[in-house]
Length: 119
Image (cartoon, one colour):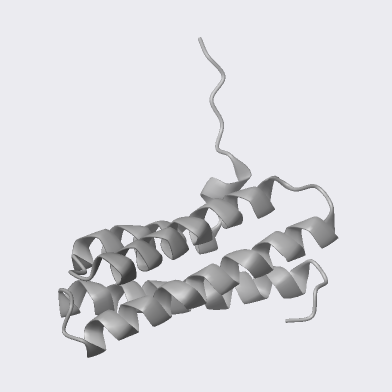
């Protein structure tokens, strides 16, 4: 019988919010290809960097990568806000995505502070 266990990132609320952000970005169906690509890449970066931070062993490494993830969440939120303002997307999904970005940002800020980098 195989040993299965949860990866550390799977227990992080920040990662769960980042995944929800990614799903909502997709559902937002942004019509402008540049903004859609930017929002998707930023949401993806939030997920990937949160996962990378969880896998790092030193506090400084964790804080640095979580800070990058937080920047990506902020970038995704701005791209979504632009899409909403420009009438370029499904507003309900984009608004939900922005809320997930805000939650991810806040949770990542907590992780950054926990591991010693001043936010």
